[in-house]
Length: 154
Image 1 (cartoon, rainbow, N blue to C red):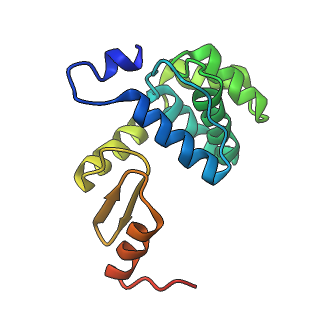
Image 2 (cartoon, one colour):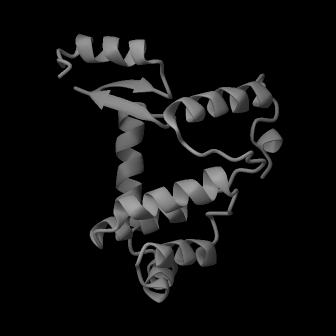
């Protein structure tokens, strides 16, 4: 689905959002491509749970980030995800099996349920003491949030 289709009927300026994302990514030193489409990340989330169990979660999540946000790869496709698993040292065939059988569906369902209970509607979201700050925020907003929750900077 194109970004225009995703945001159809809503007063959202896609070019402004993309410009802000580019600026934040540049500030953080993160790579970011010019993504034109969005893909369902559900299977990537399920395979991410499996990769975490295998001790390769961080590597897998980083590979999916790069594939989606830099290269524009369709992370809804089993073949693409299995290939990404292989690039981080996991079994491509086992990854395909995990996705086919949907062994981690319930774990992701549980994560989604908890997210809804906490009011999480976007990423990133920061949660402390059942309170949340949703979306990418300036440093000052996060600093205030930490202060409200009696979290001291080190």
